[in-house]
Length: 479
Image (cartoon, rainbow, N blue to C red):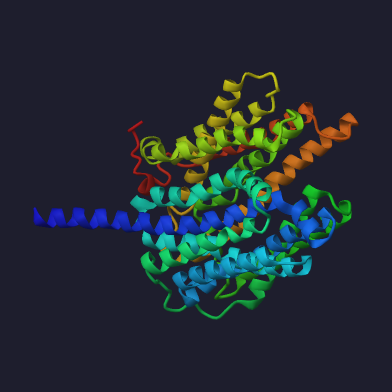
């Protein structure tokens, strides 16, 4: 009896510690993702402050993205070599200090340098933070732990523009960066207090060539996707960067498969659950879901003619939907399993995205609210299920590389979703021969994105019925 009680106490304590670690990581993730979405609202005011044209401010976003892309491949090795806790703490410190200098910048040059440093800190934060969660949560605790570190990615892109608009209007653009200081200090204090140090005994020497090839490949790919959204400079630069990114990525893959101690171990892609959740169906699903926060504000402002504040009221409903699914994620996965959830919920998510294209100003408000709530709920469930399934069958030796590769693919999926949505809008506008997008153009964009989501949800039927059962707790025949 005493042994059973001791075991139960150990289980409860293990769950508590895993949740605390996940919450600590989530705080830092929230700061990082919020910063990426909040800054866009203050670019015109920053341009006026620096004495430059607003279009010149886009370099601040671009340099952040490119430095982040360059350093992501290095994150797993650094975590193994110097300890995940130490590198995570360093990444938060770098990000926070760079945020201070962004807020204090008096010219565009200073701002660009600070953003580059901020991007380097951001690159290490997500993959290393995920490694920490994976190392501190048992498989039975993984769903709840992943759900906790997923909510920043769901909520920050929705509330970031609203918060940024409010701060810029009633305070100044500087506070869009200075707001990171208390969050960053809190995050570092929590890491020091609650996150245990864990490091690999032998991380091996740094694979310099692998780092150069993978960093270059990811950087060029993301730059091409970013350029395709803005359509700056025409088609040639986009195709050139895309070609360079693909070639370098292929060279990096061949290199990793040949050397004995590669920077990134690719064996995780031999695990069906990981490959499905991150590379094939998972990427397509993320493309569809990531396009939605980009399209919705444009629909409400350009299609409906609403102000940013009025559009924000609708987005808050979408935000509430993202939060509302957390309480039922674990029991649903336990009852239905990953295969059924990813297929059924993915279908609901895709159909709700496509349905947004048929919204018009005359649509009753309660119908818009209901649709946005469903879209938010299904988005939350899909992200949590994908992020959990990805690591359901990954062994400890594969964690660092698997986390790094997952972060790289998620960055590609995020920009690819925006690029596809923007391309659909632009093509529709060009075919209609009008100057700006209208409701008809948004309808086509949402339908294209929704179709991608439908196709990805069908792919999940290739999973075994008991895929990831050790993590979800699902037993065949319990439906």
